Every structure is written in structure tokens, then in C-alpha cells.
Amino acid sequence: MVVFDASVLIDLFHPRTHPDRKAKFDWQIVAIAKVVNARTIYSEDGDISRIGQRLGLAVIKTDDLPLPDSARQTELELPE
Image (cartoon, rainbow, N blue to C red; front, side, top):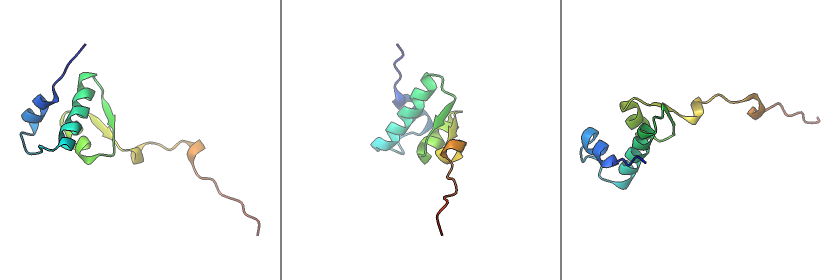
């Protein structure tokens, strides 16, 4: 089992400038990704994107994902 304290990353890369819970939560998400050797994070959150990229992770927004043909809107044929 691996136990990782995200506060180490918080203090190391962003010392006490974001003391709120959201910032700590964002750092924890990125820290977990690093611990499990993830290469990519899929997120819409700008802070997670910034932190992830800073630590060498690729961050992809859902808008950047390819849309499968089955999910594309087709032309609707209406009677005139």
C-alpha cells in the first residue's frame, strides 16, 4: 500500500497561497494521479489542469475528446 501526503506537494510547489479546501482537494487529485503513475487527467477544472501540467501530466478537457459517430447529431427529417 502506498500512502502519500498531498500537503508535501502543496508546500513544495505552492506554499500557503491557496489555503482553501478546494486547492488542497485539487492537489490531492493530482498527487493521487502521480502516485498511481497516471499519464493523463481528464478534467474541466482549470486549477487541476494547471497543477497537473506543472507536474508533467497531460490534462485533457472533455471538449477535446473525439466525438464518436454514434453520438453525433443527425439531420432530422420533418414533414413539410
